[in-house]
Image (tube, rainbow, N blue to C red; front, side, top):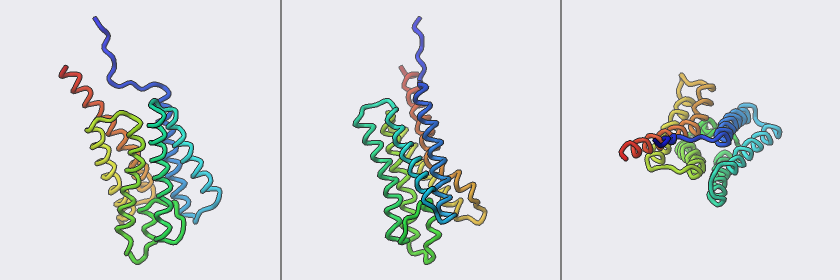
Length: 199
């Protein structure tokens, strides 16, 4: 009688990397929010980029081909650079706060669409970097992308609503990266389980 292999295998190194990524996402979100609220300081900026570089560098310890890991790291780094560069021509300053929060700086409201579009798209670009490191089924990709867009609208609503609060916004902002990754993994797991059951 052959021993059935588990459908979901999580080596200790993989768990460690994902935990580190979650901590770095939380730290980056909090520091970016602090930069927006306090007006920023060199120390906050240095700590923010140190955490971002640490998160991206941790991708190297994930299983996979070297070129795949480099491509994923480049995508996430690109999303972080664009996050800063694309705000500059609109608000005439480098701002590390989240897009939906920074949109409050547009007192005229003429750039509301610009802020909303990039606020939704840049987290998707970062998530693609995550997703290419793990083999994803079509269901995983679709689930991850749709849930990322949904979490983006939740984050936007939490900062724009009169009933919204800063803690709720920070949690929703973190969730834009964590929830889609988890849901896509669950979708992949269910697809594999269904395919195994059919066999």
